[in-house]
Amino acid sequence: MRRWGFRLDVDNGYLALVRNDPANTVASVYLDYPQQRADLSYGRVATATAALLASGAPARAFVPTDASAEGAWTDRTFDDTASAAGTSGVGFDRQATYQGLIGLDVESGMWNRNPTVYVRIPFAVVDPADFTTLTLRMKYDDGFVACLNGTEVARRHAPDAAGWNAAAAGEHPDGQAVVFENIDISVYLSSLRSGDNVLAIQGLNLGAGDDDFLALPELVGGTNGWLTQYYSPPTPSTRPSSSTSTLRTSLTT
Ligand SMILES: [Ca+2]
Ligand SMILES: [Ca+2]
Image 1 (cartoon, helix red, strand yellow):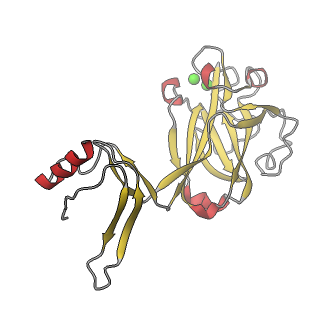
Image 2 (spheres, helix red, strand yellow; image 1 turned 45 degrees about the vertical axis):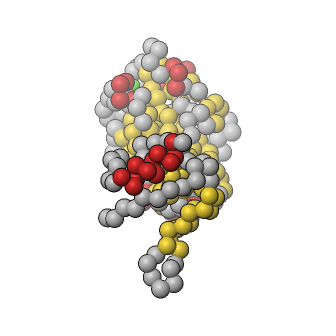
Image 3 (cartoon, helix red, strand yellow; image 1 turned 30 degrees about the horizontal axis):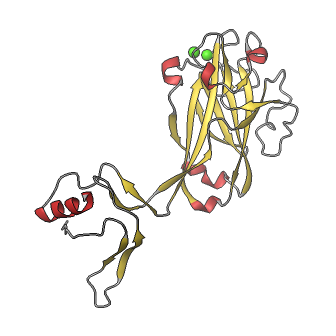
């Protein structure tokens, strides 16, 4: 790779990269690039991300008392208006560990009653075609089955047949439960739709008598658009030539 150094006006200006062809095709253009800053580079990145569903989103939850909702409760159009309402995360903790993460407390329905809770979180998407990747981020204790508009997209510590009163098949230790696990669910991008969507989570505690539970999901979409931004640290991280030193000097004055 070859590198060149040149001077820029530190305040702003016009910069174009031109291909070495007969027509001098403009390969990339920075029209009115912003003020340049010391020890930061500036340019385009090929991917960007958008939060489709963030922590603290409005959520509904109910603890099933029989099998009557099985097969239906994950559907986007399921009527959940009678369910408890709050914000994510959904959970309970008879100690203090998860208290700061819980916006919808389900202790009264789960503890010593049922290790399963049904959680539904709506979110909106303008155009699913904007996204090329989809990531589910989960903080959870102890397991879950996640469905996007009725299609299962991920599960952790779930038994093969997770019925209405299922428990987690293993423990997710508290120290790991409070750290987001990133799960690539890009193969389910086709389950996203324009407009209203629902992420449905069957939360699974280790047992009905276990004293803590947590389900805190986020969804992040990756785009194939171009994002122009500052970079820190700048690249290349070492100065390949004296001309680059000149550029950096010009940017700090
Ligand atoms: Ca625990
Ligand atoms: Ca637990």
